[in-house]
Length: 170
Image 1: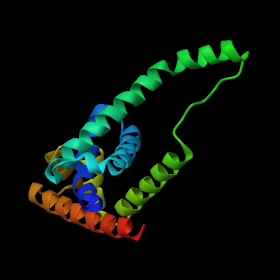
Image 2 (image 1 turned 135 degrees about the vertical axis):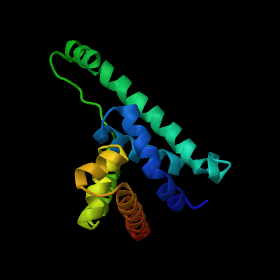
Image 3 (image 1 turned 90 degrees about the vertical axis):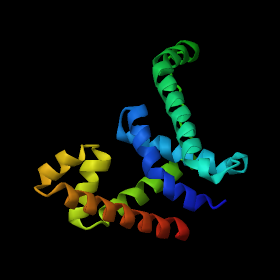
């Protein structure tokens, strides 16, 4: 299976799901990167490539839930650490490798969005990142709904091409 192709086909849809599950874009970006890393490491356990998107989404949901559990428990863990160590807090976090991979993926995604022509970037930002309804995006930009859909389609195609080039060069 071609991981890069599967990831490129699925990442946008999974990201939108993760924004809803995680509650914000920043956590969703981090979770998506972590999910992609886990999926890459365990690709041999996937039987059908057609199930990749659902599989990646499930991995992402689990990572998000783990993140939320850690965040909920963090004050208790820190308090315990203070009591045990006589006043010093122990900060647990992702490994340096994971942090570097996340930062690199965020930069690639941000560069991809910034590379879009202004008209496509505006539509993509409002529709995909801010998750506004298509009618609202068209109204805000003063364009017709079909024009908005056309710009969004071109933006997605251009982003996919940019990500293909970026990931094949890394």
